[in-house]
Length: 110
Length: 122
Image (cartoon, rainbow over all chains, first blue to last red; front, side, top):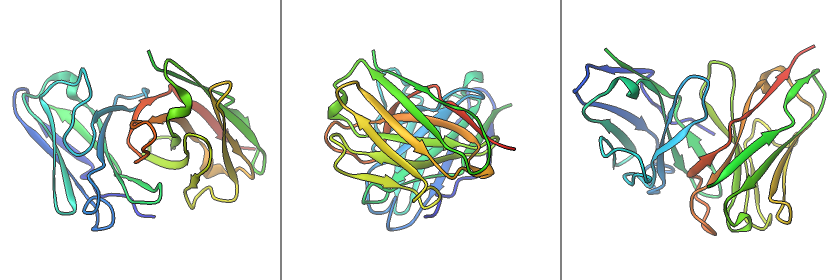
């Protein structure tokens, strides 16, 4: 079982946009539209912010958006705010109840 | 509101066993698959197990296969994770999570518990 590949860190200034990539294979991201993104603050449980590639759960600001092209999914955070500083994880369904997570990206708001 | 509350974590010696439980409320429990995701100290998320709505199907990551067992009690709205033959690298926070789609598990989790800390050390 292989993890998805995310950059370990990303950063941006308040008001800017940042995009975090998540690279998988044709057996996971490339095969299914079941890509999720989770936000996690230190010491807290993960929170779902994007599911099915681009859908936002109720209550998640539209500053968060998701997309996918081929074997790579992306999370874009627009209009960066201080409280966006957190760890972000992608995940993808891979068939037969398998799910792969990315290694996580620490987003810093400068 | 949906609530998931893990219990059963603690300190255990290598080779020992623990049973984690996750009490669910606020939704029709037997309509949803339930999963366990763990996070070692300072590390990322690792999906380790899932059980479908009625318990007909289960999944285990290679790292825990043969040592951990997932089960559920749909009468009492609880999912369990039995951890046997524990090793130091099983030390982690163990999160219980609900699969988002009822009767249609695709490993996207919408609600998470607060987590249960398991420490494996002599």
